[in-house]
Image (tube, rainbow, N blue to C red; front, top):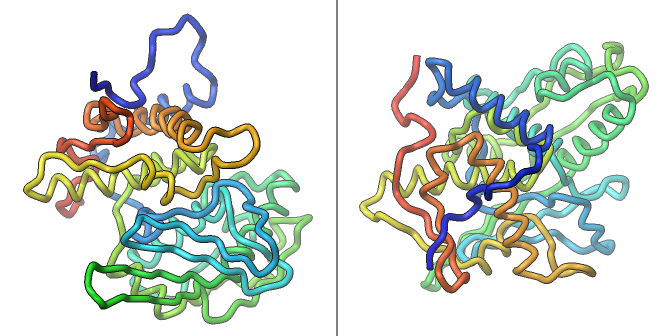
Length: 313
C-alpha cells in the first residue's frame, strides 16, 4: 500500500509553537501577490548535497563528504583554528551571498556597517552574546574552507572543481558588541570560481520560507532540494522520479549510524518529520511525495511548481 510521506496524523495534542510559527509564516506569504516570485537563491551543489546539520567532530585531517552517486561534495577546513561549518548559520550566510551575487552580478558583497547589520541581513537576532559568538565562529568556518565538487559519469571522463568562498579575508570581529562599527570590514570578495558557480547554477527559492525553517537545518535542506527536484521534474517529459532512501541518506548532511540510531530507519523517520514542516511552506508538494510500498524508495510526482519560472515584477 502506497502512502504519502509526511502527511500529518490526527492527534489530540497541541501543535508545537515552532511548527505553528512555520504555518503562520506560510499562510502570510501565500496571501501576497508575489508569493510565487523567487527572491532568494542557493547554489545547486548545496541543494544536491548538503552541509552537516551538527558538528561532525571529525578527526584532524579528515574531510567531510556527501554524495548522490553522480556528484560528490567534499569540504576541508584550511585553518587550524576553525573546523567545518555546520547548522543554520552557514546555510543562511550562503543563501544571502548567492542571492546578493545574483542581484548585483558582482563579486564584491556589502556586509553592512557592523556585525549586527550583517546578522540582520541574514535574518538573525543580534542582541544575544551567545548568538554573536556563534555567528562569528560559523562564518569563519565557512569562509576558511575549501569546497571540492566531483562529477562522475558513466564513461571515462570525470570532472572535478575546487572552490574557495573568498580569495582573501580580513574581518575584525568584536564578539561582545555586534553594533560596533570600528574595525569592521564591510565587504567580502567572492572568488571567481565561486561566483561563476552561482551565476550558472543557482536554484531559485523563497527567502521567507527558507528562513522560517531555520530552526531545523535538515528542514532547510529538504525544502531547497524539493523545490529544485520538483521544478526540474515539471520541466521534463517524465511524470515521476524514484529515489532510493539509501541515496537520500548519503546526500543529506546527517549521520544516523551513531549510538542510539538505527541507520536508515532513523533517517527516514526524521526526514518525514522535517518534511511535514516543509509542506507548511510548500503545500503544493504534499500530494507529490510518496513512499514506495516496500519502503525502499521515495517517489516524486510532477505537479504545481513552487516558484514561477517566468520573470516577476
